Image (cartoon, rainbow, N blue to C red; front, side, top):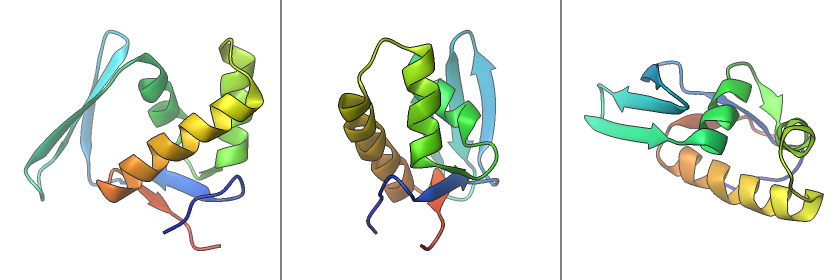
Length: 94
């Protein structure tokens, strides 16, 4: 699966999650796995509550954090690809 700026992503609704300070703790009952996301990862988790494009995620993060667009896009794409591999998020077919 290839992610791009125009890819739409959303949370896996089957994951249990809880807020712990600035972090998000998640568990997949089906897979028996546990995940933790820190500040920026937790913010991305908030943003993918509803379907959203990578481009929209980056626009929000650029507004909220001191990061350039090229760096943000590269890091968000890599992060989302990892989440998709772990079935934490789903990527809509383009």
